Image 1 (cartoon, helix red, strand yellow):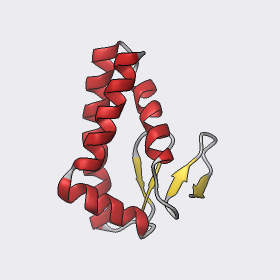
Image 2 (image 1 turned 90 degrees about the vertical axis):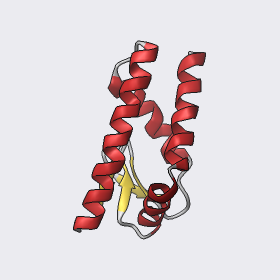
Image 3 (image 1 turned 60 degrees about the vertical axis):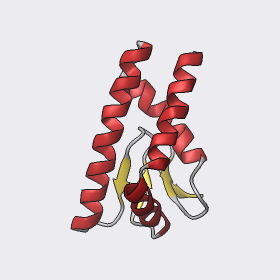
Image 4 (image 1 turned 90 degrees about the horizontal axis):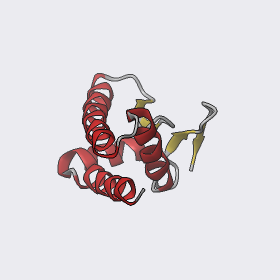
Length: 108
């Protein structure tokens, strides 16, 4: 449990510390272009090539990190992703869109 928590905290640090990408993701969230899904991945809320590319990049990096944490802790990737989603959604700023576990979209 402690190793999983430490890994999730590291993951959150990585997700918020990616220099250019973090700014773009943050800006896209604030503009209502990207939302956070309950499964730990980002979702394009506006279908533009730039937003789709950003979401694809963010999700590829998250998938890789979730797999690494999963392997280290012997937990399924989807469990790791859902735990990360809870942390990501908790830390979203006001006005950011997120998906609830039942699939509904809300704003903070």
